[in-house]
Length: 139
Image 1 (cartoon, rainbow, N blue to C red):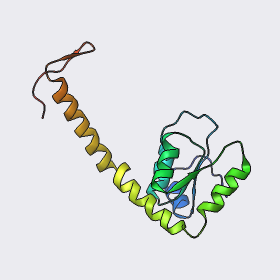
Image 2 (image 1 turned 45 degrees about the vertical axis):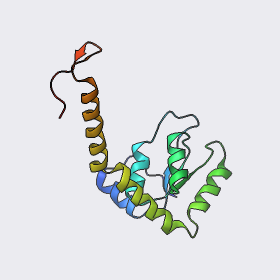
Image 3 (image 1 turned 90 degrees about the vertical axis):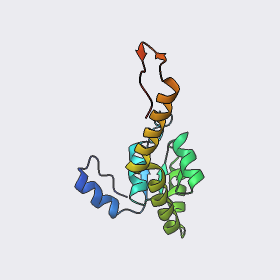
């Protein structure tokens, strides 16, 4: 296991390509939803070992591309790392890549964002919102 600290983009790409598992090590109760670190690991096709609860835990569990460990229990981390390194590693890597493509690549995110803004514009067409006034036709 290597803890690199801050890496520039080129070194990050090289480290991700040489990695087998992405570690999202956060303190207990950290307020993150799904941080960029997890998304970068998915983009690299890495199964994720994460200490985050909530959205990240649900995503990894529901999609089958990672596991959550208890940040206060080294045995929990060891169990998750061992589990992610098992014979299903290739399957989990493929799931991670597919999930990134489906939910987190720029085209998917921006398309969903544009759809959301268009729906909002249609809903608010001609109505005042918090001191702002939406005018015109929705596209």
